[in-house]
Length: 143
Image 1: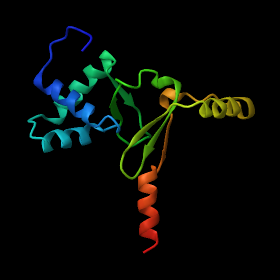
Image 2: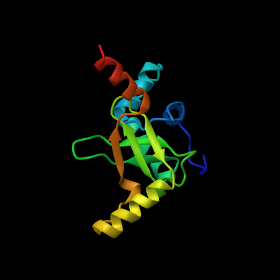
Image 3: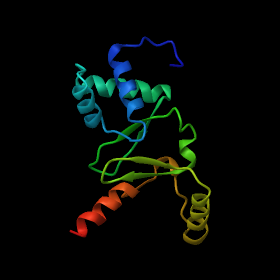
């Protein structure tokens, strides 16, 4: 960790769980359930406190959800330029994809030029189905 802040077992557990699920953005409830499933004795309040500290240190990114939906959290080791691209979240499995490609720059430019609207990539989250969940849905529909 980049700062000299005291590291608790709970904070390390939260960090390790986020690392083990780095392809997903987890809610505090999901994170708490995963930790309990792994045998960790940690309450939801402590999970929130740890997440707040990790977000403050820049190690974890908080993604705000729509009204009535819980925010999600993801470890930022591999995604340091997260504000420069859009994000996709699978409604089926929860997979979180960083859409780090040049195509989206063109979409952002088009929306601004033709619709007079600037997309804030830091706060933009598109929902849909990942390839795997889409295949599952198609195969269930064929039954």
